[in-house]
Structures are given as structure tokens and as C-alpha cells.
Length: 299
Image (cartoon, rainbow, N blue to C red; front, side, top):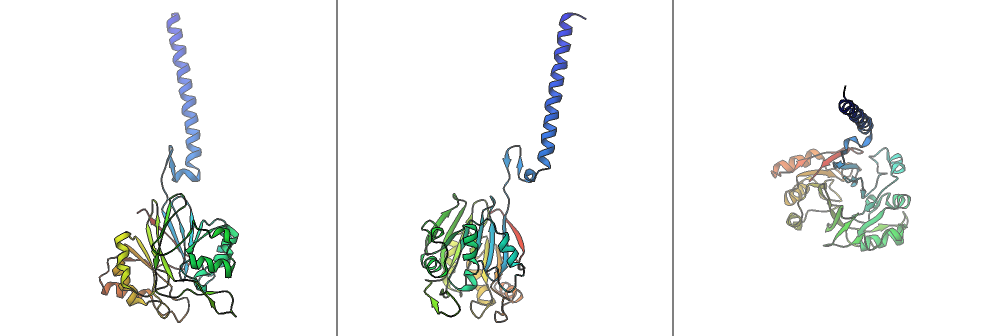
């Protein structure tokens, strides 16, 4: 064998060995990657977004987890009569970014102060509700500043632009109960929220409300994917008026809330379904169980 052939053969062997080492290292790293929790979210440097997750706790209490895992609570009365795991769930809430309160009634403020103190969550509410919660209920003042406090007609851009919250009206009351002995303290006007998630859905939480014609204006400014609507009757609109509200807003999906917590709240999803069909509402009805989490997907 000539010297040139020896050098060429030796060189090819070295390259072959190098290729084997590189391939081996890739196989090892790939094996580690595909067995890791990130495997379903990352592929060769590209991040695939998660779906927005929605949990209903009963009454009007919801948890929203965004595609980047920011955590929002809306009207967090987790310790309501229909959610049995409230104590464990509250203890498990180690991280909450925002707590949104539609109005001052105790079944909507709920466990907000306790959760806010333990997690450092910022309060999103109208100026009046936030002021009442700080002064009368003890919500940490440093977590209820102007960056997250607004008013009707305004929209906040929060969490580096991942979440937008528009303040919209509701027809109800909003007194804050400091304790069982004192009367209600001033809590401003009641409201709802239109919550827009970047890479996710736009969610309209009605708060406690009656039907009113201005609901039809929401669709001029927001393309509502999910409407969380009160149907319980007695203190809010019942199934018939809630069905008409859905027709006015025209969301893609509607989820009933604020029913069956107490016997006095007599509205039912079955009656609500009949009212939606009677009005030929296009929205898909999705009935959740207390404690259930569903995926809302991308917008």
C-alpha cells in the first residue's frame, strides 16, 4: 500500500470515528430530550405553545392558565359549597399572577385576600372595588396599584402583553362586607371582564348581571371565543335572559356559571340549553363540573 493510500485510509477512519462519536452524542442527547417533560413543548429549539387551560371551581370562580403558564383567578370563591377540595386547592396555589374581581360581594371576593397575601398576586378591579378591598378587607395595597386597577371602558395590557383585560359593565350591586355584623361598605359599580390571551382565546366573564342591550356592543370591539355567563336566576338573570344575552354577544362557546351553589339559584344548564336552542344561538354549550379543567385551545 502506498503512503498516499495509507494516509487516505487513515483519514477516512478518523472521519468515520468522528461521525460515530457525533452521532452517538446526538442519540444520547436526543434520548434525554425525548424523555424529558419539555419534549412535548420543544423541538430543535422551536417552542410549541400550550393551550389555555380553564378551571371552574363553582359559582363564578375560575382559574385561567395562559400558554406561557401565567395564572389568573377570577372571582376566586374557591371555598364555596359545591367545591369539595377548596382547602387543598388554595394550599396548592403557590403562584398566581393576577386576581380579577368583578364586584365586591363576598361570593365573588371569596378567598382573594388570603390567596393574594400568600402568592403576591396583583389585584385587577375597578378603582372603587380595589379601594374597598384594600381598606376594608386587607388586600395588600402594594398589590393593588394603578398598573392593574382600571375602570369601565378602559383596557389594561398586563404580563408583558400576554394578557389584556377590558372593564365592561354589569347590572347588579357591589357592596363589600367587612364582617358578618357590619353593613355593606361602598364597593363602586359591578362589572365584567373581557380577557384577551395572546396565543389563546378571548374570554368574556359577565360577572353577576341582568340582561342589558349594550351587551350587543361587545362584539363590535371584541371577537368573543368563550362567554362565562351567569344563569342562576333570583340574584342574576336566569336561563331565558341569559340565553338572550348569548344571542347578543354571539360567542363561539358558552359556559354557564353562578347556579346550583344554593337551592335558591334555580337556573339549570338544561333550561339554559333549551333557551339557546329556542333563540337559535350559534354558540356551543359547554357545561363544566366544579373542579374540572378544560383546554380552550388557540384563538
